[in-house]
Amino acid sequence: MFTHMKYVMAVLLSFGMVSSSFAIGGSFISNEVPSARSAGQGYVGIAGQNDDPTTVYSNPAAMTALKGTQVTIGGTLENIHGGYQDNSGNMNKERVTDVGVPNASLTQSFMDGQLAVGLSVQSPYGLETHWDANSPVGSVATNTVLHMVDVTPAIAYQVLPKVSIGAGADYMNLFDAQLDSQLGNTITDIRGQGANWGYHAGLVVKPEEQHAIGITYHSKVDLRVNGHLSVTTGLPAPFPSMVTTSAYTDVVLPENVQFGYAFKPNDKWMLEADTAWYHWSSTQDLDIRFPVSGANSTEPLNLRDVWSFATGANYKLTDRWQLRGGFWYEPSAVPDANFSPAFMDQDRYGLSTGVGYAITNNLTIDAAYTAVFMHNRTINNAIAPGGTYSDFANLLALNFTYKFGGTH
Image (cartoon, rainbow, N blue to C red; front, side, top):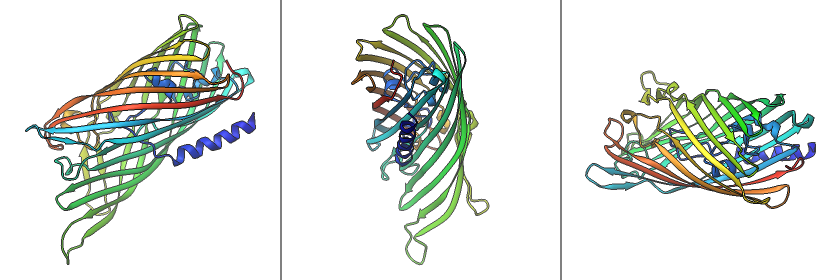
């Protein structure tokens, strides 16, 4: 059993650290796609009743319900379509982007399930947008990228027969930050990286076998992003064709509290509703600082706190097949006055469907599809070109889960 655990842990770490994980960027830069099983149910899972190792991240307290050694590896393919229509009716399309968001999780139980440990690799935040340099948007943003990975070790303990608690560390690594723009022949490129630690903790209470309540808290993570700024001037000699200087900024990933309630009316159905509060207002601006005094660049954000909602269902059709569906809604965090096409923050809601199939008693495959609808935003501010911004995304998720022992 311990040999299995050490081998899988090495695979998970290498899988997460080399993957280029990023996201669609709705509700500022949040992007929680923990697993295909969760995705098929509208991304619920805080109550911890999904029988899914990714609970290491979503609510570590629920690890005590997972027996033996369990591992899941998968990812989400995000197909993103964005556009901008100016006030005269002219349309500019954002480059259609296909990006991959990996996930991997491992759990190990001890003491007949009273104690459990786990490791998860997720990408709860990320962003990628691409606009043509010749479009009206290009002067604000051409290529914007935030590639992040969260490596999460966690532990859980069943303090009472109906109560479990858990906690985990979060190593948040922003390994590729990019913000580019172009005005005429002048091209501005900003690059950087940063990493820091945070933590999360959870609680699961099952007052009766049919009911479960879960709470998870994720701490704020402050990332100091160090990098450089390069400006290609397009000027002839003797003027410099490129100027480069070091630069740094701070990215704040907000603290958040998530609540979940699951109801199992019988052996076939599992219903869950989740809600979450994100403290986005802890970030008020994007302040890029340079070694030269007085050369700092500040872009106001004035983010607002938001509540998101999700609901989903899982139906056990047979011993092999499970069917799923869900709906979720997440409002934008950026007010109209500070909207930027670099981040494309819009109210969004998703419709999900999914399926699970037990290939053997130990090996399961889960697949899900989510259509993400983003509300158009008509903007007239000092940052973005005036007009209407639109976005849509297809999300395809796939996970393989293997249980080395303690099958249910």
